[in-house]
Image (cartoon, rainbow, N blue to C red; front, side):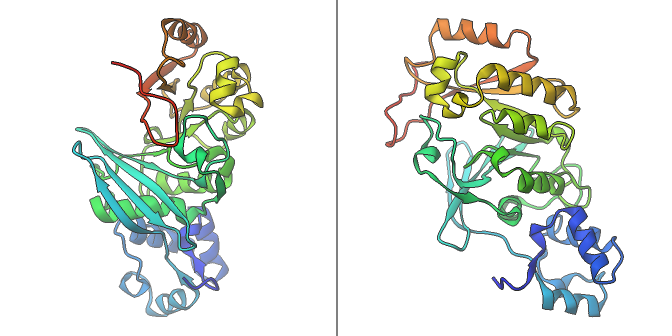
Length: 313
């Protein structure tokens, strides 16, 4: 990758329009570029036939369209596909496509590693390296689309839902995550409904509040415990932002959001004899009783870096 050139995949739709104005072009050129990249998968400027020849030459000289490369693919028996993507600096991130009857959900990463360090999380055990650039986040969606199909602005989209629930804490890479969401929502790019783009957070309360009114997408909260004592152990960021503060921030976000249908998705990983007792369930009901929510119970996926175990059925 030529670092002296502008990677257009790092630009939000508005920034792309500003770029074209800066070189003496009309802002609508950004719409054409967005469609070529994100709806047709074209990265060769010379193939963008509705651009003037001299503009194509200038873009070829000054700009690139570059995203991480898929270096491995694993497909499970249920159709789930995991991709490893090379960022070009020796770092690797993962994204996962989960096919269902009525949707294809892509889970993407926002950081290399994760600074939150949830006790049961394999990514957290790897430590934190850096935030991903816009091109490295949206590039995961782009690369997945090269495998399952681009939308071409059709009603039935090969990738129908995108969830920021891979490696990293999205709200600790807020500016880039907001730009990625703007690309996902743009009618000239992936054109996803705001209800089909989800940010999953471990509970960075002040940033949830900051997000309210700035971006309207679906919100998911990784809770995993219904009291501060246990959550402090499982989700260390709870020591800084306890449950009450997080819940207040979530309510504030929901109050300004049209994407959530008035509710938040609560993610709860079940850990054998840790947070899966009847008492834990009753505490969860009490905590969430007045919060409009959908609860997603997730049996722990065992791995060699953890002493936690999956609960019995």
